[in-house]
Length: 95
Length: 494
Image (tube, rainbow over the protein chains, first blue to last red):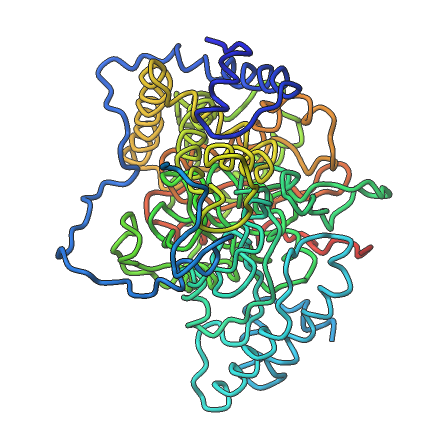
């Protein structure tokens, strides 16, 4: 499988990365080189093999459903480019 | 006091406890070394001199009271991937401009608990994506090693290039590092240092900027096997804040270092004998086997049939996880923000300006392999192949193999801005061909300097162990270190 210029533009939109028209051809070439390299996975007989979900055998731990953390909104927004009254500020999304 | 920086971590710690010198003197010696050489090597992206001196004074106070921790007063460098409270933490990326976390990573908190001193934050490939430290927003790290009679700048490897260079150039007594596909072991091999990537789950990932969560693991880079064991012991341990942290006691790693290899079975996987492998790598590997045999180990040929599929599977799994993990960099909560005409425009412009080329490429590959219609063909298939890679190792260990010896890298350090590597991303990826299998299977791996190439550049061997058996790696690694008896001091030019 390989990608064309339109697919590169579409992936850029899905990934929320602006790709300029000048960059499209270079990304197309590089992504196809990598996809070409991973193509060899098609040779492997994976019949009846379970996909890995955890690299070490473990059960996901559970804990009581109680609040154990929080109460420091000012720390949460401390690194925000723009914040006001402990809220993150973004461009208007709803009219 | 140049000589203090030349001490091993172990001797430095012992000298501090004996009060031969103070922690402040040791820290000042390292700060002077950084001041003098960092412009040339570019290993540190932030130097925290004042904080280091106040940590050192606190260490001196604890030593005076007889309350010294296991790493009391030892000056360390910290990879820029670890969150350090109130201190530069940017994963060497433009998109995290100005980010100073309000919290401390568990691994670094463990080091400070044990008395260590932080000198600053170390350069790395952006978001740990790279094998040459050239994808850093702060520019490449330069290897303190040069070919004999050459002044050509060589890479220090990646992604933990700053960690490896700082340790090799006596700019810290040891460094934290992380390894997703080889990012501890490959730079260690390129700089004549020892790098350990422990078993997945041994060190907490909490507060470590995420790249590919099912593969990422913290570890150490140090100047000897014993030093790396001492550092790893402090970094490790169960952490309820990381859901994949292993709830196991941390062994006394340093106690295992002189255990030897008598009676151990060392596996030699035939699939690691790659076409076109340089003769000096083959010779180094044979030499390593001879050393282990001479100390009483049994050498056994083994087969790990899915080895060649590890790297392609990695380049599906890791970008997929990266595309998800890096979705958080949106210009809203931290770091860089580029204003746009609406919110989507802001996201797209921020990520276009904030991410470097390699990061964009991997996020886009990940987005593609996870997109509708391709998920089964790429991602699910790669995870099935990963099951088979892990099974290969399990079968070898179940048949009685205690550890596996392989080369660490296909070559010694290459030049900064190498044209071949720049032209073909896959060529750069092949640097990790011997190390990536270990991450795919979640196993521990150690890189130990074992020889030099024709130009006098260091070459490393890798030992791969059973899950949570880092001790055998330290023991066997020490045998290689002792047998090789290399002079691992690069000629100082910086």
